[in-house]
Length: 453
Image 1: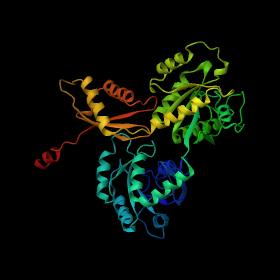
Image 2: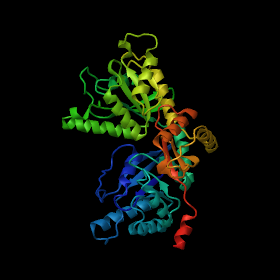
Image 3: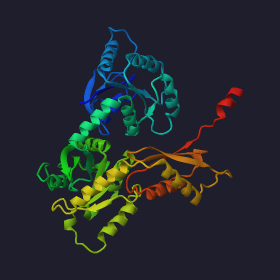
Image 4: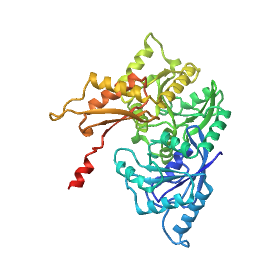
């Protein structure tokens, strides 16, 4: 590993959730109760093209050295001493608390480069906490949601900034070993052929298969090299309707599948050609969309179908009708048994991954925005015109955008859908979730008005 980063902060701010996200699997125990983590835990982390060691630490508490909290604090201080840089995590929704101030001072005193992370920033609830965080004196706060995998590109940029030489060396090492593997999860209902598909891709009987549904219980990862691009592919247990999940072991298998989806970058939804797009397939698509993953639909057992001209077009039309939450999602017909269509599937995964990582130049984005608003202005609400000022891309993975406007809560959902669909079409982003948030511009006269009162 090239360098070490310690994750520090007071209890229950999401340090272990961030640790798990960086490591790529659920290693550290996570619970809503504070103080679950007591020891230092190290893991091999990946953030973009950076590989490094990350240390999860106990929450900072001010306590005597002889007490358990005091000894936990000593372990955390040792982690700071050992690290090359520090991720200082605070809870954006709680705002800056006295313990945050005390231990931010400790991080500053250590002299280690630090990145200030304001966690739990999903939605708008944490914005005031993010602004308060500037007072900690640790630089610009990086908004993040470790639970929902939001904000990691900004964290990557911040880490590059505070450790320029070590991160540059780490990237050079990655270049020497080739591109990092794309994490892919294969999901679907039981007996769709997920394990058979992976065995065909890697060219060996690596995973157990059977005509009986439910053979796979664990989420198994296998490595694949396809045309010079490395993949880490996760086989998963089939997802049935919740009412049919009875055995404890199946509940655990479903939990493993959900974790595989959360840690994946691209999710392949495998459907059986004989009963594609049933209700459970739509629920699986809902889950993937809510997690913000790139998506590819693979219709399996194509070798068993009596084919007719236009079959693929009809399948794509059904996908548009049944999976409205994923407009124009890439769809490939395959046969896991014979290998038909697998090259097209792998190319679709690579293309979907590229769209998921897409960043649009600000100038092009605002030219589109002006044209879209001019062509279809927002409707007046209660006789008052809504003013949309400008747009910016907040992050990629998935592509997420913020529109600054007046009266954000009054903009109709239908108009937000219009902007999202127009954005997706203008910049060729089929299938992958696109996030669009409306935010009101700060009123420069507000503080002046408060002072007068």
